[in-house]
Every structure is written in C-alpha cells, then in structure tokens.
Image (cartoon, rainbow, N blue to C red; front, side):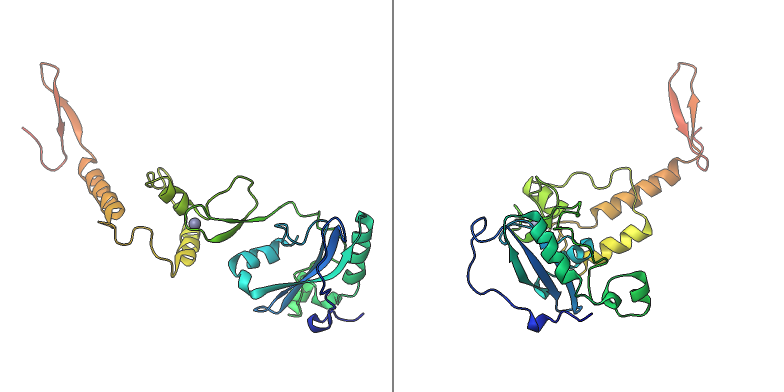
Length: 237
Ligand SMILES: [Zn+2]
C-alpha cells in the first residue's frame, strides 16, 4: 500500500472533448487549508456543475472554495464500468489509516475526506450540487435545489422588496442563535444604515410591558351591558 501524493499525480495537459475523447473521469481534490484529499469518479463532463460526492468535502468547499484544487487523474471512455474500475484502482492505492473513519480520527491520522474505498462513479451521492450566481448579490453559491436563485433568504427578500414579519410565532433555540451569530460574524447587517434597527427589540419590550400590565385584569360589566377593564393595582371605580 502506498500513498497518493499530490505532486506526483500525472495530469493530462491537452484539452479533451466531452463525449468525444472521454465520458467520465477520476478526480482528486486537494484542500490546501486542511491538507486533505478527496478521490472520486464522475461520469460526466469536467465542466458540469459536479463537485464531488462527499458531503463532508462539499460542506468545506462551500465555505471556502478558494482552498480547493482539483486534478483529473484519469479520463475514461464511454463505459460506466471502466470508470468504476479506474476509480477503484486509485482508491486501492489509498492508505487505510488516512481514511475519515472514527478510528483514524481518534488516532489523528485522517488525510482523506474519503470514508470508504469503494468506487461509486460519483453516483452514490443523494445530493446533487450545482453552482449558481445569486440573483440579488451575484455571489457564487452552491445548491442542491433545482430552482434556487438566491444565496440566502436575505437576498430573496431584498430582491422582492422588503422583509416579511420575522420569525412569526417561533423562537430560536440557543444553539440556533449561536449558529446564526457565528454565521453572521463579519457580515454587514441587512439593516445597516436603515432607520431604527432596534425596532424589533423595541416591539418585543413593548409587548412584554403590555403583557405585564394586562395580566390579572378583569372585565367588569355595567347594568346596561357595557363593560370596562379592572386592573389589579389601580381599580377603576
Ligand atoms: Zn445573494
């Protein structure tokens, strides 16, 4: 068993044409920041939106695509079994102690995003990601949803002019709050420069105060059927 080393990977320099020169390929991603590799196969064009079939790698890739580089190890002809065979050939070269397994995580030897060494031809993934440009801010994003146009809800609502009532009837758990706060760090708040960013908080305070005032009040009826509120501390006579 020997290791795949990034620098010794042979790369085909000449341009190949999809469905003429090749129908699929075996690829190797390298994450420069974490110094991690992902090896996989894809039955399709090099230029389609396919990234990889590892959910873990995709997650990292979405956060910091600039840290990733892909090399094509092998182009294959129009036969799916050829792709699987080639993918397996490269997978077999991988070091078992560097796979993303719980055991390897414990011993801190993980160097691959790959968990198993079984060729899938890129098909096992339930998630098909595609790249797209946000229709509002124009940033490059990745999604598995077919009809998605915006990178985040903020852009959607900004494009549709105006936010709806926020989180009506629901509250975030502390964990969700932490995640949101972490995600938003360093981002320009959507309401920066707009009047009264405290509106929501003020509304909440007002509602709380109102609720305190009205707690314990009782309806008192007059003889003619009309009624008025009677508050616990300041009784109306
Ligand atoms: Zn956007």
